[in-house]
Length: 408
Image (cartoon, rainbow, N blue to C red; front, side, top):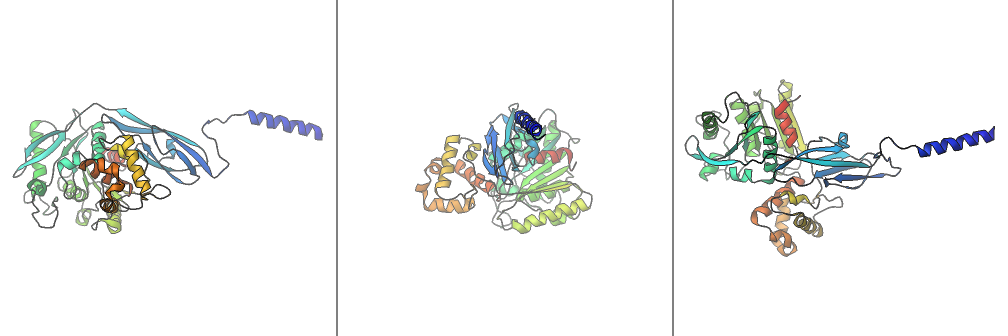
């Protein structure tokens, strides 16, 4: 009896040892760590079970957009976003970033008559349109600054790929290069909330009506707005005044008086470590309150809060004219000058790093070799990774989904 039991046990062990997992990637580990392999992207490495893992797509070429992640995409917060994260499971994970080619397009530039003066306008109207999206710059920004910004360029490409028309103009103070109200900044003006005495609203109306008159679009096509900072607050008032289908604010809590009465769906995309006086933790909390207030009244609203992300060597290759080799050299300058912690998170904001750079420029030869615009966009990327006051493309697909379906 004992002997037959031993034989049965041997047979059982032999059979089970030959069985293969139905999932060749499963490889459940017996240690406290497992391996992530990212194809066509970054973030590969060994992580402890339960760690938050960040992954990124390769830099996206001009005539491409990020498509989706395949593989263990069920782990991700949103498989459609180029930068994603997940909690490390007790198994090895292989995941692939995919991009898709798009039909080449370019924004057209011209000066279009506003209420009083000619306005700088960049625009693109696809043959078929889900809607027309007005993109609104922040304080001291401009139409040109917006359409050449690394993160905004990705948003524009994603919107056009999703069949949205694009209109970019600028605040009247920017066009005049005059601080009309002497507050130290060139900005959109929220008040008064009417289309006649407030020139910024009147300009949007005049430009819109020009496109109607030309037949580029028509009154049946819904309107949307996305604004950054001061432009985010203006997005809330503009979308309410002209009854847009929905609006979005990045890094601005916008105006309480609007959300007390508005029925326009609105999404907030905030940054956790925003250090602007008008925003910060108080502004982020206010934006959440306004979003909840809309929802309580039956109005669709979403709220997102960007957190910090690690630096990876190829990050700066997202910027036009910066190669992977140059990006890696920039990364090494940050690392060698002690700006990264053990998990590659930045220890300080771009403002702090710029101050140290100014004091010791010889320590940053690669940064020195960049032109002024590239240096500016490197600082913008640093702000993005610090979850600071900067427009970010990490929620592009989420934003477009909000335009497409609202809260569904």
